[in-house]
Image (tube, rainbow, N blue to C red):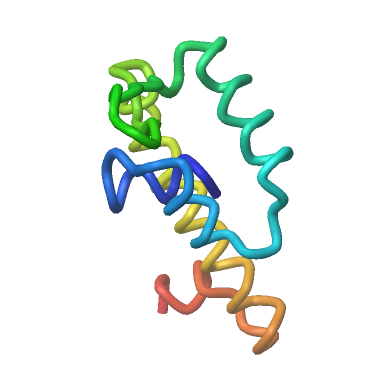
Length: 95
């Protein structure tokens, strides 16, 4: 969900990102961002202001995941249609 958000909005301040995910605690969001930063998927940028501003965004490695995430998103949409309507979107496209 975090990566999906970055693809559509770009870099985001931590507090703004957290406000857009009301069911996620700050602690959990911060842990996930740190893990993705350690994996080289996101980059953290700190601006020395008062109070300090911390921005997160996709690294080049993270940006390379875009096509994969688009395929997953498409699969999820088809899965949802299939399970809410009983129709198989792939079979409907073939007709």
